[in-house]
Length: 196
Image (tube, rainbow, N blue to C red; front, side, top):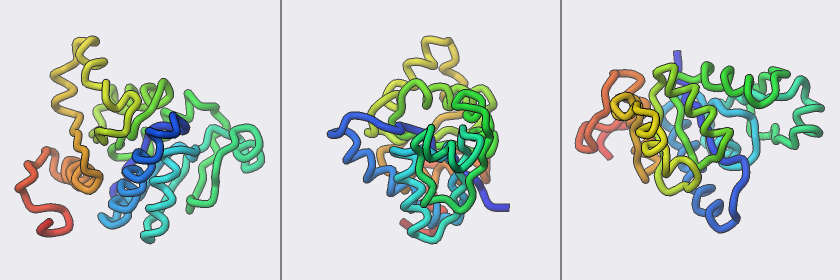
């Protein structure tokens, strides 16, 4: 069975930060496809959708988990996209409960920027012991997760569950290796796709 990597993050954000973050999100989506994984996200706009678009462009498979009850509600009430998805699961659960289904549908998650909704998704993934990859340099909560977890006296768990990088390819590959082999490799270790 293919590994499913969830992409969580900013559905919107400051224009200046979003341009660079969008490019990084597209790189994440590209490498999810190139490593033959399935991309799972909340079927929302912003960085998760940028990753989905790039994944599909590279021939990857994308599953969206919508908070909406139907396609019509997805488009009209939630103002969410549908073009980059192979399948959209319409949960009808709203954002909070949808987040649980979204995270549980993935084997690991990658965090791109984000606000309070992304923090909720991160918390679900973290509490359930999922591997979490954090793409540094995308702004939002992704730059503060270690500090937040440390305030909750869970720093030891953070070190076991969370990996980070400013390099989208490296982050995707290391996240995949963590899922497959249960460890975080050093950058000198053989990459998922071979050498380099």
